[in-house]
Each structure stands twice: as C-alpha cells, then as structure tokens.
Length: 617
Image (tube, rainbow, N blue to C red):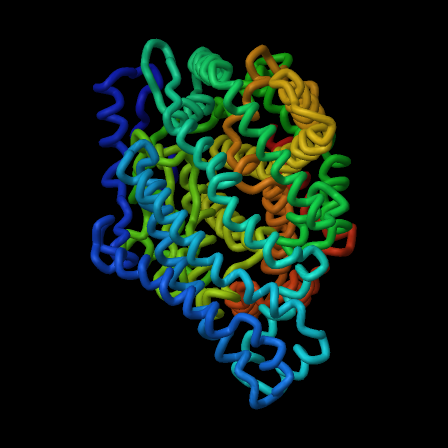
C-alpha cells in the first residue's frame, strides 16, 4: 500500500475560490449518502403513512395494554407480556425509523428551512406518539420482582427480552409517578430538545473571517493543523472572534440546560451530578471515578511530557494553544484522496477479519456515507444506527488529513458494531456509550497499527507515532479534562447562573492542568468551550471516549498475545449489543474494568508510545 506521503500536497498558502476548488478536486469523488433505504424523499407517501401509523398504533397499544400488565404477569405461562413487549418493540422500531430519517436529513443541511421544519414537525409527532408508550416501561417496573421473574421463566417470548427487562428495572429507583413522567416527556420538545436545536442551528450559521475569507467551522478548525504557524494563529483568532460575538447565546444555552438537568436529577433522586449518565451507561460511579483519577494522575507522564517534547521539535520554548495540533516537520503535508483513505481502512480491517472488512465495504458500495464539507451540514462526525430493519449511516466532514482517515476508521468501527448488534432487535441492539466506543477506537487502532507496520522510514514513523499519541491524548486526557470541566459547571450552576467569564475560567483551569506548562493558553482560548456539542447534547458523555480508549488498549494487548480465537470472541462481544454488562463482555478476554489496575494498563500503552518517540528523538 502507498503511504500518505505519496499523495500530492496542496499548498497551505493557496487561498480563495481557485484553491478551494483545487483542494476539493484533490480529495477525489466524495460520497453523499442515499437515504432511500429509509424513505425515498421528504415528501414520500411512505413517510407520511408511517408518521400517521405511528400515532394511530401507539394510541391503540395504550388502549389495549395500559393497566393490564400486572394481571398478565400473574397468569404465568398463560400471560401475554411477551406479546405486549413484541408489539412495543415494533412501535419503537417504527418511531425510530421516522425519527432517524428526519435527523439525518436535517444533519445534511441544518440551514435549510424545509429540512428544519420537517425535523421539528417529526420530532413533535414522534414525541406525541411515544407519549402513548410511556406507560409501558413505568407499569412494567411496578410489578413485583418475583412475578416478573416467574413470567420471564414461563413465557418464552417474554423471556427472550430478559436482558432488556432486567436492565429496565435498574431505572426503577429513579422512576416518577406516571403523570410526571408524561409531563417530562412531552415538555422535552419545548425544553431540552428546543435548546439543543438552537445550539445546532447557531453553530451551523457561524462564519469565521480567516484572512478575509469567510469559512465554516470545520475548515477553520482544520487550519489549526496547518504547517504554517501564522495560518494556525489566524484560524485560532478567527474562532475566538466569532465565539466571542455569540458568547451570550452559548452561555444562556449552557445555563438553561444545566438547570434543566439539575431539576430532573433532583426530582429523580440522583445524588451526584453525573449519576444519571452513569446509570444510562450501566457503569458504576466508582469505576468512572477510578478512571478519571487514574488519568488525572497520569497527566505529567502523558500530555505534559509529550507536549514538552513537541515544543522542542517545533523549536519553541512553549507552544501556543493554536500549536497543539500542529504537524511535525517530519509530517508529509499531503491531501489524502478519498480512495486512498477507503483502501487504507479496509485493508486494516481485512488484516484483522475479512468479515469485518466486508461489512465496512458495504458502507462504501451502497452510499451509506456522507463525506463532503458543505455549508449548513452538521459539523464533526457520527455513525447513526437508525433501526435494525435498515442499517447505519456515517457522516463525516472529510478534508484529506491523516486525522480524517482515522475518523473514517473510527466511525466505520461504530458502523460495523451497529450492523452486528442489529440482530438483537430495536430494544436490545443499542449499547451503553462506554461500550459503544469500543469498536470505533479498536478500528482506529487496527488502522494505525497496519500503517505503522508498513512504514520503515524513521522520520515518517516518528510522525505517525506522534499523530497517534496526540489522538490518544485527545481521546483520553482531553476528554477527562472535558469531564472535569462539566463537573465544575454543573456543580457551580446549583448556586445560580454562571457568567461567560466564570465558565471561561473553569475551562482555562482544566485545560491548563491537563495540557501542562508546555502549552500557553493565549487570549481568546477561554471561549473554546462553546463549540463542544457533547456538553449540550449529552452531558458527561465525554468520559466514554476515555473509557473506550483505555479499554481498547487493554483489549488490543490481548489480541497481540492471542494465538487464536480472539476475532470470534470480539465479534461475539459486538453482536451482544446492549444485552450484557461490561463485566460480562470483558470476562472472556480476562479483563475487569472494576479493577483499578485495569486503567493503568491502558494508560501504559500511551506512555509506551511516548517512550518510543523519545527513543526516536
């Protein structure tokens, strides 16, 4: 395979429309997704029919089953809880299909009023439909444990859903009275959901003046990886300038959502500000606390040590914050064509498992990927599982950087996981966030190791190792710093509204602690918290990345030392979806995330890569 250095470079100094056109051509033919497997178009009669059917059948389900579940459980083998749960799953699948289509259409261009209206209308209608299903889980959880266990044993159809039923009952201590639950559910569309949408639409409307050129968020962030320090600084200052102009809005959104979460947590009886996330992730608070403590303790030997080395490589006493992701002098300044990125990832997957590569190849062959950067398109990247009767879709903002190739490997890892878990059905396919990142990070590791093994040039090897270390620091150190930032924000919010300055102060505190003295946080960086979507959409989501990376580091070590059978066990883990706790999934590999030493293994892998870099220095 050709390495990245063989690709034609696009000069960083070229600007304007001509350079943009040339850069686009250099990427090759980027795919745009085909959503027809969900619905043919926004005005497809099938979509309209399914929207109406979701509302109608949800009401009928409520009429048929509400108030009957306890009696059905008491009937034992003659009960019909299995039939009710099967019908409930079918409705969840239907609602999920409609909602997934609306979300993907909207993500393709959040600035399009027609798409925004479709998204908003469908959100409202699916919220209304699912309100009729809300009673089901609540009522099921009110049934005595002994009766539930008896029904699970007596009714094979109900017993099929045992993992979902047992998992559901973990929510029981935090469950409210039915009418309050319904109010929370229905108000979400005008509460949290509305503020999330405001954030998304505000972000996609932002424009950044970079040297007189108006740019979107993703291309502006991309310039922070430019080889020219002046270009990086210009991009950082453009980001800060636009963030400052919108600081009032982002501060209001953050304050409102933090208060919204505090109200919900207080009513439900959660003790810690992150406990609701831990419950959703089906991970114990003690496990997350051990992870966070281990990473914080490792800051000096990981990020502090690496960035001090990097500053020296760049000929600086200390780097500015806009230099953090600067390429090394050894790094080829190349645009990586789409076909090269595709072949790189598929080859790495093939070396691990032909079956894994075949699943991933389907995403390319059937246009399940949307890769180009477009005005209005949602920033970042994701893999959306949609529903088991369809298939996942991947969104990227591909600009031909080595990191973009790793992002492709990451999101395809999610996609493979989602395809394999689909056999569990709509209720049990979804995995907790902590485990959802396993396959994605493992896909990145496979791709990195494949490229590294084929690289003999010392300078290129150094550049690749440095890039991987930076990615791992971003995934582990940076995400735990994000987690600590959220803890500060949500804790202080209990005492009243936070000013922009106070939020910025928290941001600078955690960043300085995690990045170390080799990086100077210059004026403007105090606003960079504003563009992180996880703070808005999924509070405390971020530690899942660190969890997944450290888990994969340990998992990959098992893979490297395994004589045979690892791939089969790995696929079984992915196929399990949400049916097993992390302790059950990791047991076949001899791993235990509840053991504090477990995190040291994962962090030791990062430290070992830094050791290797020091040896090459």
